[in-house]
Length: 246
Image 1 (cartoon, helix red, strand yellow):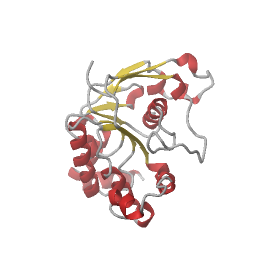
Image 2: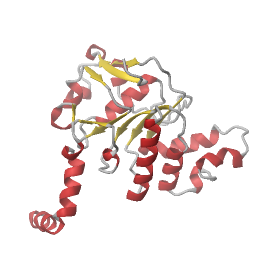
Image 3: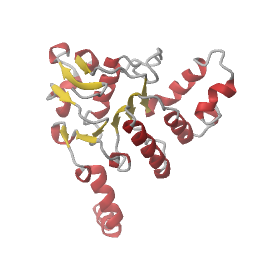
């Protein structure tokens, strides 16, 4: 057994309704067991292949609020969580994380608002110091995202769904460095992303959801890398062909 907080997962499909849409997601419906070997695991693939669905199920099965936040966040603005978490069993390692966070780009504004509410009586200047000195709502969308990420310093367990959503390439590189450092210090990350920058983090494992099966994929074979490389190296030819087809 390695030292990861989450060693693997097992799915019991008897706990999923036969009429569930989950049976219609090829990469998900064929999954029974999945083991993890690295501190950073990326879920990569086209939209609709099940990356975020599995990430959410793992986070909720571990104990996180479906809309995000720490393990202590308990609120609900819209019931939209899939039933997959009820069928998912997590194999935990011998270590327990000192901290944990589930980040979802689509619900971060709500989580930021809840963060303000959970501040309690802590003086603003002390509380906001960890977030760049300002409230999330006093920062731009991208700044608040990155402030949240950079506040993660404890050796912990982190689920991230498309963390690149509001970040410029430069800010993605900042996140790249921060995640790499934290992983090397013992944190574990599960990240669903399309970013060719983040996918390039060394010593990570990329699991592709394309082709109807979840399988390891070298960085250079991800669609995110190949399309970005093709656009940069063959931009004129590619644009001409695409616009002619249009």
